[in-house]
Amino acid sequence: MLERKSLDYEKVVLIGIINQEQDEEKVEEYLDELEFLAYTAGGEVVERFTQRIEIPNPKTFIGTGKMEDVRKFVKENDVGTVIFDDELSPAQQKNIEKILRSKVLDRTSLILDIFAQRAQTSYARTQVELAQYQYLLPRLAGLWTHLERQRGGIGMRGPGETEIETDRRIVRDRIALLKKKLAKIDKQMETQRGNRGSLVRVALIGYTNVGKSTLMNVISKSDVFAENKLFATLDTTVRKVVIGNLPFLLSDTVGFIRKLPTQLVESFKSTLDEVREADLLLHVVDISHPNFEEHIESVNQILSEIDSMDKPTVMVFNKIDQYTHKTIDEDDLVTEKTGEHFTLEEWHNTWMNRLGNNVLFISALNRENLQDFRKKVYEEVRKIHITRFPYNNFLYPEIIEEEEE
Image: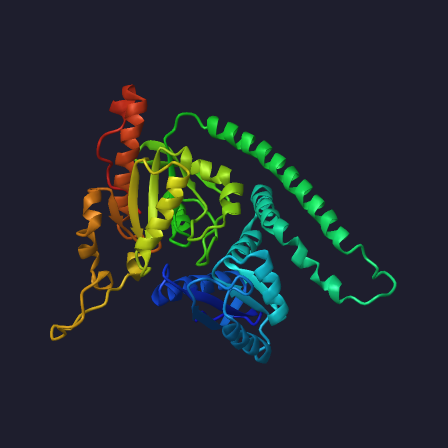
């Protein structure tokens, strides 16, 4: 489990289910990621609960016996927050809170909370606020359950259910207002993108926490915020970069993640427009992560949703300094060799070989193989540039000279 350096944290319990779609190993992997999300939000995971159940309980998501185990643990250990790896219905969340008498979140609400913490600019805050209200609207009734337990008295004769309807109207009005505000900002950003001229646009994409911002800082010699936490970057940062003597625009985008809330995909539409309008994608992958292939699939799924799968793409496998592979003893005739036993060279000879020269292995943090990275980016940008401006061909040679890192 992740250890926190300060005492300013909430005790958290995680819950996941095992079924045909996700076996025990897959659930543990999802809970590892959920724990990192909880850590990023300011929590410390003290226990995990899993249950093998094909169809989630419509009332409490997990079975009554397992729920009783969770209730006892929460009470005995003074746990303040329980987080489910899958999205809960409003009714399920309301029922579980009644049983556990603690704060109950699902993966979606946790990600929304992290986005709310991380949003720095007015634009990002507006995007997150819209997503939060869209998530909140069907759950408003649950927020008023405390009225059922209220006694009479001065100031306690509230309107009850009428209050819920009032809140729903307020939230709907707020959603409409935020959508108008975002539409206005989106139009301004579209104009800004149009005013950037005809420079080639390159976008850094990838799963969250793969090192995109670190790579951005190294290549553009800028100071983009980078941290070993999920969703360190929410706002798209665009920098003019020159490699050799060839200028282009490089953008650092929000990281993707499995089960990314649909509310966030919608509200971050303009941020994703940077990807849609890019001429070249640099798909950054954390090769040190044991499940990096699934991360690639998750990113490709979102690219497919925003119609960007057909763009020229370079696969950049980052964090080679942290990559280690398991070894098999020569006398071991039982253990089957899998991806976790591959060296980087062996990985290169797998499905990656089909990508040809569009594969790079680097360490942005330790600046390993960055010269190869610069050369490759230069080559790809040059192809696009001379297609757009054939009369500039003589200005940019096919090979750039060695640069100091």
